[in-house]
Amino acid sequence: MTTIGDPLILSRHEISPKTIPQSRPVLGSCSKGVKDEYASIGIVGEGISIIDLTSLQPDAATLLGPETTFACPPVSRTVTEESRQQLRQTYAATETHSSGSATKGTTISYWTSSATLSSLEKHRSLTSGQSIQALYAPSWHIDALIVVFTDGDVAKLDSKLEEANFSKKRHNPRRRLIWSFIFDPSSSSLVWKHKEPNSSVLLSVIQDKTDILLRHTFVGSSVEHGEELPLQLTGEIIASSCENSGCISFFGKDGVLSSYLLESHRGKLFTTHLDSLKIQSFYNETASLLCLGSTHIILVGITRNAGDIAILLWDVQYSVLLSEQRLPIPSNLSSIRQESLRLQLIRCNESQSMLIVAPDLTINRPNQLPAGAKSNILLIPHTFPQKSSLANAIGKADAGKAWLNPSKSGCVPSTLDEQREGILGGLTESFQKDNIEAADTIFFDWINEQTAAVKAAVKAEAKRYLAVALGKIPEDGEMPEDMEIDKEEVKRKGIVVKH
Image (cartoon, rainbow, N blue to C red; front, side, top):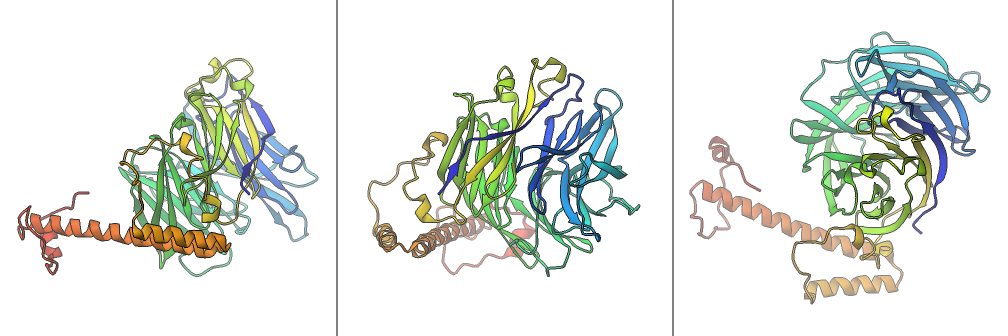
C-alpha cells in the first residue's frame, strides 16, 4: 500500500526583523536515539532546538544570538559512555556576522545533552578558514565528525573536536559542491573497498565549471576518493536525493526530474538512467525531493494554479505516480509571494519525513516580511512498498498525467508488433498466476534488449560519422560491416563525435 497522510505540526519559528538574510531561515536533520527519534533544528538568528519526534515536544535547546547563521543543518547522534549513560552529541557549523552580511568566520561547535539535561552543554569549538557545506555525525561511525567543504573536499575530525590539526587543502574556486549524502558501508550497495570498522561512504555531486560530477569517498582511518563520474545533466539543480540502495534523483530549475541507479565496482561508479520526467504546474524553485527506498521518491512543490503544496510519491523505475497529497500553505505565510517560499524534505524514518516551509530571506528581506510570518516544520506520514514492482505500477499510467508535460515525441502506435504482443501475453499470464517476480523478469529483460538495441544503433551511427570524417566513405555511401576505425588517427586529427 502507498499512502501520504495528513501532516502534523512539529514547530513554528518567528522570523526576527534583525535576522541575517539567508535563503533558508531554518535548517534541520533527523537522528535516531536509543529509544526514540529526534530532529535537530537550526534557527537562524536564534539557536538550536532538539525536538522529540515521538512526543513532538522540545527536548533540549541552546541560544546562539541574533548575528548567527548556519552554514548547514546541525546534526546529532546518541552514544553510550563507559558509564553506560546515554549521551547525545550535537554539532553545528555557524557563521557570525559583524555588520550587514560580512562574515567573520565559520565555526564548528560541539555540545552534549542527556535525558536529565534540557539545555545543550557546549564543550569545544574549532574555526575553519574555508566555507563548510555539510556536517555528518553518523550513528555507525561514532568516533568521527565528517566535514564537507563548499568545493567538495572532505575532512574527518574526532568526535570531541580534540585534535588541533584541523586543516584543509587550498580552496578550489572552480569546483562547487551541489549535494552530498552519507551511507553506512554495512548496508549500502555503493561500498567500493573492504568494509572497515568505523567507516562511512560519502557520495558527492560536484559542479566543475560546466560539468556535473558524481564522486564517492570512503572515510575510514583516512579519507580516500574514488573516481569521478560525469553526469549528463544541464542547467541548475534545485534538489537532489540518494538512497543507500543506489537510487539517485535530481530536480532541475527547468522542471525535469532525472533519476539513475548507481552501482560501484572496483572503485568506479556506474549509472543506469531510469527516466526523465518533465514536471509541470510547479514553481520549480520551491521544490524539494527525497528518495525513500528502492526507486520510490517524494517530490514536493508549490503549485502555480491552486497555490498549495503538492506532495507526489513516484516510482521512477516505471515513471508512475503512486500517491499524492495536497496541503494548504501555512496561514502565517499566505500573504508572501508563493514563488519566493522554499520547501525542504528531510527523511526521519520509514514512516515519516519532515517538511520545512519557510520564506527565502534573500528574496523576502526579514524587516519587510508581513507581521506574524514564521518558518513551519511539519511531519508527513507515509507508507510505501519495500520494493518497486510492476504489479504496483499496473493501472497507474494515467495517475500522474496532470503533473507531466505532454510528450512531443510523436504518436503512440495504435497496434502492437508481434514481440510486444508476446511480452504483454507473458505479463498477463504471470499476473494471473500471481507470479510478480516472473513479470518483473519478463519486463526488464525486454527493457534490456531495447536498451542494447539503442546503444548498438548509436555506436553504428558514431562509427559511420568517424568513417565519413576520416574520408573512408562518402556521406551518402554505405558503411561496410567489417570496416575498422583507427582510434589513434581519430585522436591525432582531433575528431569529436557530435551527439
